[in-house]
Image 1 (cartoon, rainbow, N blue to C red):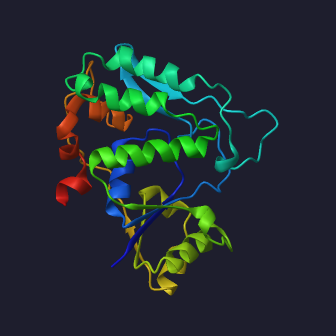
Image 2: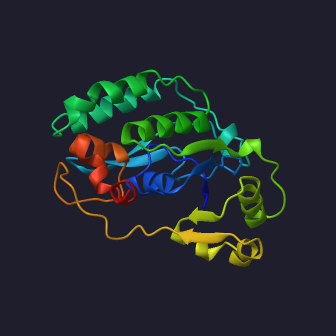
Image 3: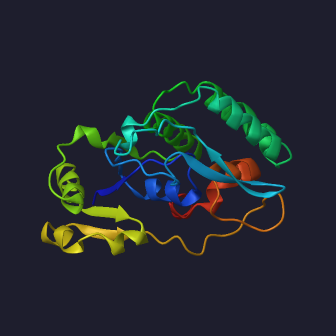
Length: 232
C-alpha cells in the first residue's frame, strides 16, 4: 500500500493539514495551481486576547491576475520579523512558549525566501520534523501534468505507483471519483471531525487556527492532539 496526498501549500496551516501529511507516504506540493486571493495560501489565523487574528504574508498581486502559487512573490521583506513579533506578543504566556521560542523565532528570522511557495514549503518541512512526521515531500513540478484537474491528480498517483489517494472531504464537490476507480486507485477522504480540545489561551476554544497555537500551548504533548500520529 502506498498513500499519496496532493494539495496546494498553505501558510502555517491548522492541525488537520499536518494530519493529512502524516497519513500519506508521499506528499506532493501542488503549487502549479492559480493563486487565489483571501485564501489559505498566504495567511492563517492565531488566537489573541481580542479574538482571532489573521497573519498574512504580503504578496505582489497588482496586474498578476493569473499567476500561479509558485510564481507569487513577497512584497515586504520584513513580513517574517513582523509575524514573529505578533506571535511573541500573543503567545508569551502560553505554557510551552519558552520551550519553543528559539525554534519558532529561528524559523521565522532565517526565512529569506522571495516566493510564497518556497516560504510555505520551508515552514511545512520544519514543522513536520518538529512533530515527528516523516512523510516524503515532492513538488508537482517534477511531474508532467496532463489532462483536466482530476486527470492530473490520477496521473501523479500512477507515476508514484500509489494505491491510495488522500484528500479532504470538500473534494467530493468537484472531483471525478470514477477516474480514480478506473485506474484501481482507492480514495481516502479525511475526517476532520471529533478533534479533542487542548489548553488554549483566551476564552472560547478554536480548532481552525494555525498549528503554532497547538505547539505553543501543548509543546511536547502536541502530537496527542493529532489523529494520525496518535493512532500510529
